[in-house]
Length: 116
Image (cartoon, rainbow, N blue to C red; front, side):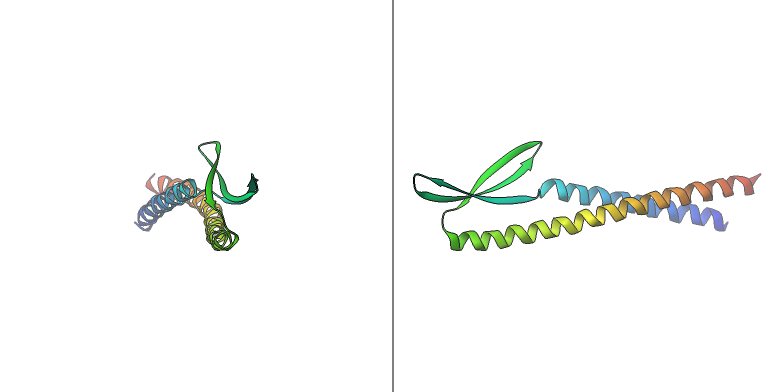
């Protein structure tokens, strides 16, 4: 019976890990990495936020003055750092899922041998 319990545990853990991976990937898709660039048009300075969405480059107007630019830049940098942490977690979770799949294969094989 311990092999069956191990199979159930591994199966549940694999499901939870896949769900977490799905949620993290959705977060990454919904929160693309962004950068800010400055344009001077007819002597006026404009700041734009640039990011990729659905395979296309998107630029959104951000602000006109340098003070607001610095505040917005802090927000964007914090969001990019958070995104980077999630990307690192995705890589670790993918490795964890591979390890769980290998363990499942080993336990299934041992379980089949013990039943015969």
